[in-house]
Length: 146
Image 1 (cartoon, one colour):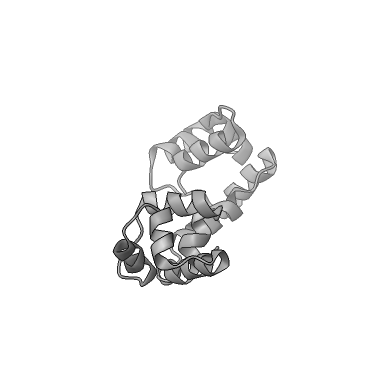
Image 2 (cartoon, rainbow, N blue to C red; image 1 turned 120 degrees about the vertical axis):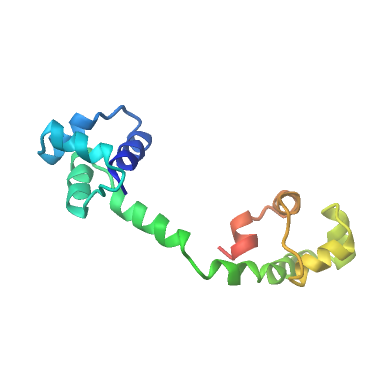
């Protein structure tokens, strides 16, 4: 995370305007030095600097940033998405619906529904919304099993 990203993230997190000089004061560095860091997009915030900022504002940036980056590169997402058919089957079984009834309820053709259920096609947004609205399930659970 560079210093511009840090400032933007902090402002969104705590909803107050934060100046470069305020960050410099917290880090105990001169205005010229902090200004140089803000001008250089390759100047990354160190963990120690991040910890000082967190302590001052009473927030947890490092952990939330680490987990969001970790999540962004989660290679299991594709595998879990391929199991959407299993979750559709579970919804059907729970509601005692056959494929044709599910397709009609979701306002799609039975072939389209079966293609998604069998992993031949990926669901579109309208399909996901229809499942969510009709069965009160989260889209995250439907797509990824979460």
